[in-house]
Length: 302
Image (cartoon, rainbow, N blue to C red; front, side, top):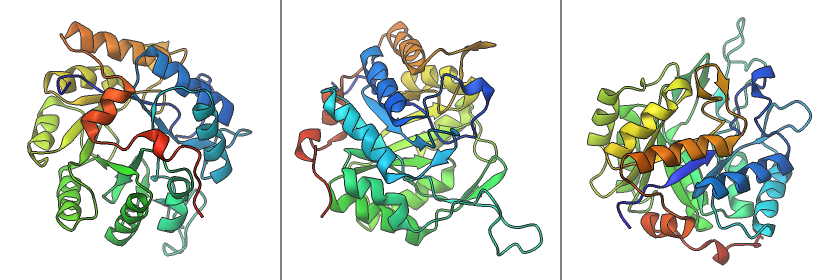
């Protein structure tokens, strides 16, 4: 069991929508269908953002999250649902008055960022533990906000998947572990290749893995062209992997992926070529120590 690799599919993300992204699902129905197809291709976990169904822009709509989750649950597809809490952290300063947010800023309270977790009670949610430059914008995750999101998640039985983009983020998370804000054993996901954060190189992956708590479950993933090389490197080091149209649009150079399932199939093939096996959703729950989905399925917050 412990030697099996969990494959996560991040199906849509929140990057700006453009013509290259025609395969990226934007409506709740499309997002749910892509999750189901990804599971059929070998994913055990689906990481979910939502978008404006008319424009494709990132969204924080609770009703969109609700529709996606309810569609997946109604399909009877066995999958570990992982909802984001990362949206609502972007700050873009106005050029004339830096203390005033410019267009595109989404900075929100922890309650707003975590409301889909509180309402829908997934088995997993992401937890961003560090402030960083993310491409051309600043992403603000203050210690107080991060702690509030972690507490809200724990209160409804949701486990945090800790996203770390740099070495310092690991130590911020370790402090939260010591304070009891994150349950043990923790699940870390190392994200590499974001402009402004740690690059997707074997040396960086080794260094970051070396600073994780010894009892941690962990995975890693790379952005854009680093996606599949990072799958291979992570599997060789004993970690879990993530692929999906949220992170990368291509199967190979110049060859756009037709859907998320194609990316998952490629990741599964890499795992098997390297002598590994992929985990089922039930096996992923056992590895990560998650509560069964049925415990919270269909329940809403009071």
